[in-house]
Structure formats: C-alpha cells, structure tokens
Length: 358
Image 1 (cartoon, rainbow, N blue to C red):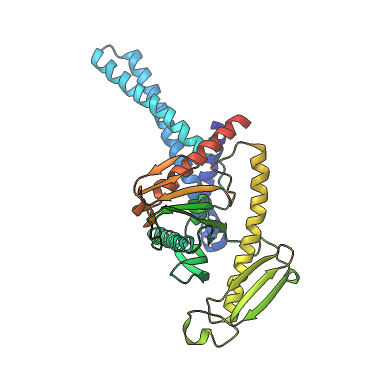
Image 2 (spheres, rainbow, N blue to C red):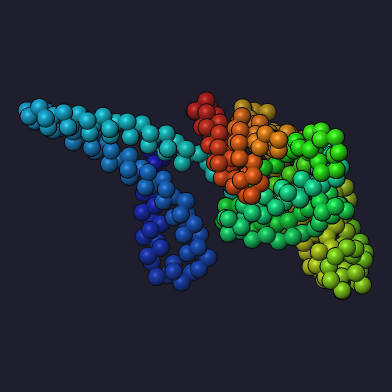
C-alpha cells in the first residue's frame, strides 16, 4: 500500500507542476483533465501527509523519552505517542478506503425511472411521492432535473415517470436507490382503515454518452403520434409525440413532454441509450457478483430494498438493516443518512474483497 501511496505523491507533484505551466493553462482540454486528476488525488495526498506527520510524532516522542529524565515530560511524551499511534491506525483505515478503485460511473448524470407496481392507484400515488422525494433531494444538492416522460394516473399519481438529474457526482449518491420500494399505509380510498402494502420500482441508470453505446439506427423504429394530456395549446394539435422501439431488445420509449418532435426524439434516444448501457452494466455486475461476495445488494430491479411504514412513521433499508423513525423527513428529501450508510457498507464490502484477493 505504501509503495502505491509514494507513487501517488510523486504523480500529484508532477500534476501540480504541469498545472502551473502556461502552455498547459492555454490547452484547456488538457488543463481540465489535469484539474480532475488533481481533485481525485488531493484527498489521498492530504491523508498520507497527515499519516507521515503522525509517524514523525511517534519518532519524536521516542527520542524525547530516551533523552528526558523529567518524569512529567516523559508522561507527556507517552500520552502524545499513544495518541499518535491511535491516530495512525485510524488513518491507515481511511487510506485503504481512499485507495478503493473509484466507480467510473460515479461522476455521471442519471436517468431515473419510477414505475408503480402492485397496488393500483395507491402505488401510483406513492410513485408521485417518491418523485417528489428525489426532486427535493436534488434541489438540496443543487442538481438540475429535466423531465423525460410522465404517464399520470387519474388521481394525481404516476403510473410511470422518467426524468434526468444532472450535477456533480449524481450517480455516486443515487446508485443504491435501484430496486423495489414498498409502502405500508391506510389508503385514502380505504373505508375500513386497513393497512395496504403497495410497491414502486425505481431504476437509476447512468446517462450514456454516444461513445458509451453503439446504437445502430437500423435497429430502431420511430413512430410519431399526437400527444395527449396537458401541455398547452400546441401540444395536442401536431404529431409531436415520439415512440421509439429498439427491435433487438423490444425496449419501447415514449416521449411527449416537449412541443417539438425533434426534442422528444432526442430525449427518447437519450433514455434508450441509457437503458441499453444499463443492460450492459447489469450483465457485468451479475458476472462480478458470481465471483465475489455481494456489495450493497445485487442492484437487481426485483430486490425489495426499502419499506416506508406510515403508521409507525419509519423507513427501513433492508440491505443494511437500517431503520429511521423520521419518515416525514425522508420523504421531504432528507436522504443523506441512508445514502451515507449504504456507501459506508459498500466500501466495507469492497475493502473486505480487496483484502481477500490481496
């Protein structure tokens, strides 16, 4: 580990020197690439510098103990040495986590699909609440939301909603949200006061650039039709809605949010690329999972990941056995505690795998 850290330190110094070179500053693509590398390496370098400082503190304390005869000074040196040794152990663990290979998808934007599952109207209402929850969370993170398509139910719910979230590190924060979200509550339409269980499926897909997925347009059929529902005066009078079918996989995407057929087509193709990219990633994940202990959950769309229990005011994440008794806060977009706990559990599992393989 320490050989690798020394190499990182050398590389960091090289990057800093290059960033100060006027020629590099004038070459913007190269400058941006180096800035990103510097940002990635900086936390590791800072932590390693702190580690070396604590090691030096231990050596200084040992030297003082050899030379010093005053008992009070010796006690002080022993205390400082014990504190530094404790901190060294903590920093070593932090460095191991920082050296875990980064998920190359972490910086990507995401396309989110929320679909009502079992439970009819009640599931559709909860799908709308989950959309609101993620919108609130995105707002707190200063991320941008762009609607792709909405299929509303008659009572203010969503049968399906697809939207894009753009910003810094979106995928790294939301990637553990894929799966089945279960709600337990008494529906407004229930006269007997019985608790019903409904489900909603969430899919978080990294946005696929054109370079990520080779999409052969000969495999794609595009149909246009007249949009329905709300959208202003123009939206219903022209064939602006677009249905895209990917023939080899049978994936169908409908987009009618924009007044322009071209914009709807662009959005639809963006969703299709991300769906195909996600299929590739799923395949890779399954192969990896077969070879090693699972990290946080399987990422399987059919995996029940979380329960929102309204009568008890609790939210439980089943993968890490975390229960929070503040359901209102969670539904208002206060997701950091859940996401941080999932990230920590995933890092611990990856660390364990690395140590076994090492």
